[in-house]
Length: 215
Image 1 (cartoon, rainbow, N blue to C red):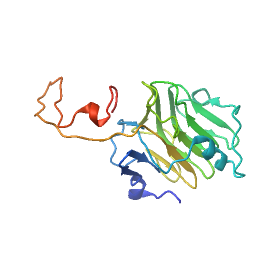
Image 2 (tube, one colour; image 1 turned 90 degrees about the horizontal axis):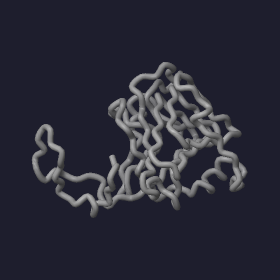
Image 3 (cartoon, rainbow, N blue to C red; image 1 turned 120 degrees about the vertical axis):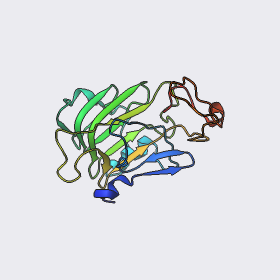
């Protein structure tokens, strides 16, 4: 479907038992520098090979020797960058860009730890794909591997229709896989005073499936 504008642009994340699935954009209430840790699991997602095949229109899967270009090497930090329809870009190192339009395929490297992607906005256009993890290799399966996105407070170049501070798609595909958690939130078991270096939780972090470095 077509991405909504205004207030509806923020209605893009829905909670699921397996985790949090980011589908069409970033919530409008998000703090401008709040990191989005894509530790999500959506049962309806497709393996990356099948998803990429669908993006090609004819349904044929991309060969295993598909050439992936280093995304961070393609874009300057203060410009609007575009992934051309015929190209496949891989986010395999830290990347900063003012705005990003995806017409081809943009994929997160699910084997490299600690990658941070900072952007003003991201729009996946019709036929384009933004892929983070796979069903067999969800983000977090390899220790230390995370997918962290910072949505900047301001953009030098606003999108002509949707403005700034959004992640969304228009007739496109955004697919995200992460390790499921038995529990995504809990309550404090004791009052946390200013300057405390420990938090006492109602539920055991290990039993909830939380790991060091989770956000």
